[in-house]
Image (cartoon, rainbow, N blue to C red; front, top):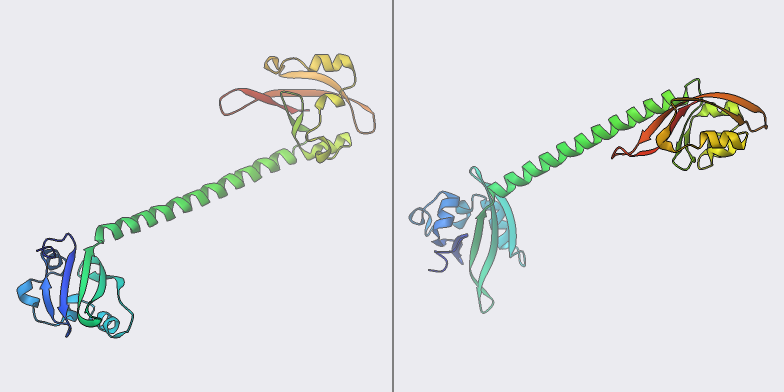
Length: 234
């Protein structure tokens, strides 16, 4: 009664591999009835006779779990021996219809691959866009730089070589250190929220020579719209 009412399909065979019992769940999974299969070989019942026959003949091979197609279903089967005083008196197969599980696994795998491809494609697109924008900035005819709210260089293009500097020399340094006079510092150091679109400033290049600059300024905003610095074209 326990085997017949079990939630998993169960097939019991004797020592000669003939079916002794088949519960209703196994009948449904295998598409056979108890009357059709009782007393017959377990191997055709299994739908993969060579595989089970091979396992039953191997010493120490069982118990084992295998997954096989049965008609349109995918079935997970656990094969084990039934022993009495170490003597093999039969075998039992417990089976479970995992068609839906396998379908969901395949769908998940498919969606994961699609997502991975999408991320790869998007990453490549972003990298290409970034490279394109960097090329635009680096090959501009003007000095382009960004500074944060404290006046520290966060980016400068290679055109800054006109001022005698390498890019790496200025990143992380104060922009105000380049300005010529305290008056210029005072004029340029207005609060970042009071940005002037156009202004004139004077700086010293690396040789100490004074240069007059016309500077166009735009605010740089963070993800929440807060001004985090400025972009300047000099």
